Image (cartoon, rainbow, N blue to C red):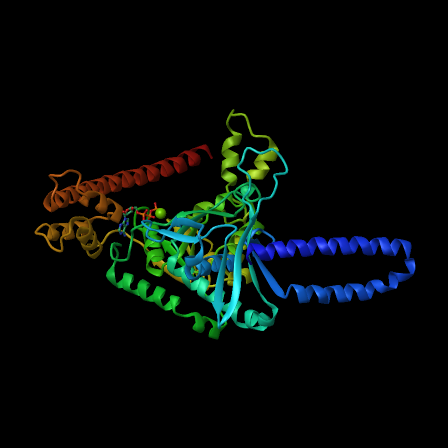
Length: 493
Ligand SMILES: Nc1ncnc2c1ncn2[C@@H]1O[C@H](COP(=O)(O)OP(=O)(O)OP(=O)(O)O)[C@@H](O)[C@H]1O
Ligand SMILES: [Mg+2]
């Protein structure tokens, strides 16, 4: 694996080229010797094996039909960076898990030696840039990278049977320990084959929400935490009962009750990545399936506001088209309109959740959120698809206490009783409570924040009373109108 070996290899190459040239000349002038071809090939292969007794295994960075980054490559990267990077002189540095330290890994065109059960193996990191076919505004695509493992052929069985699985196992473990959690979002499909090359883009997931800071009924919270814990440790159980290792959650409730905050808390609790799927930019069911395949295990797939993303008749967003029709605005050419229209159907989505493909990978949560449970198709939310429904509702006193502790650092206060009394009279979202409890200036203390909350509760009560009065008046007006109408029609008839 050193340069003298490369030199030797190069001279062997030119020797063989000369031999082949000579053989071609001989064959041309003495056609009778052509039948020797077969023997010559056979023995030259043996000779080659004697001179170069090594076997090489190549692991490319991208594999599969859709240029999916190979898991094996990632595992090897982690393995090599942790076990062999001491001997490397050129290293790559990337931000580590806590964002404050750098993780080092082997740079391209570097070579390291590994020892396994007393056997020496060599790893090298190779990169080949692909020439660009045409002029493009985008930066050129990344070079093709791969790792190459070289070992003596007498160790073939050891490498195939034990070493490779050892590397994969260790690499995955190291990767999990070191990884930064990621928040993914789907790229529009027009970018898949372009410079982005991937179905998903990601940023580092850094939401600070936890179950400790999440305000909700403590009994419901405990139930949910227990459910998640059971899921996480239930791999064998799921296999035993013949079910894919995944679980669907439906979070529903009015805006500002903490649905998105809860997803972040779940991700932090389980240490999973989040795939935030924007259904409106998925073109059709096939694309949806591709997206699913490219998610990794230990992840949460989130579809927010499911009632707004999918028309349950099968086609989405037909309303927009109608609205546009009435206006004088210039319309996009029909082609573009077709392109933008998404054809993800309910059945496509159901397949995504629990079809055959949904079992690949395992250890996934699928979370839907909605403000309007009643708008969803029962097929979508039946048990088995959405295994658990969690209602996020208006702030109760217990939830308020969590927020008070969180925002003001207090467990009790003389104004708590008044807050409790008023909370029983009127509905307020945790988001509104949180906003009032947050100090707005240096002079604000717990008392002033609680008074501001009491004031907000008072205003909410007045607004609710006013809304009720208006609704009652409107209902009365409607009744009068309909009576009048009937009377009129009676007169006409
Ligand atoms: N239960 C809660 N516990 C703690 N904070 C909350 C809670 N609910 C809301 N908040 C606060 O209110 C803000 C808005 O909440 P969030 O975005 O989670 O609501 P949502 O239910 O997802 O609303 P929407 O239905 O409009 O998406 C959050 O940033 C958080 O600070
Ligand atoms: Mg939300």
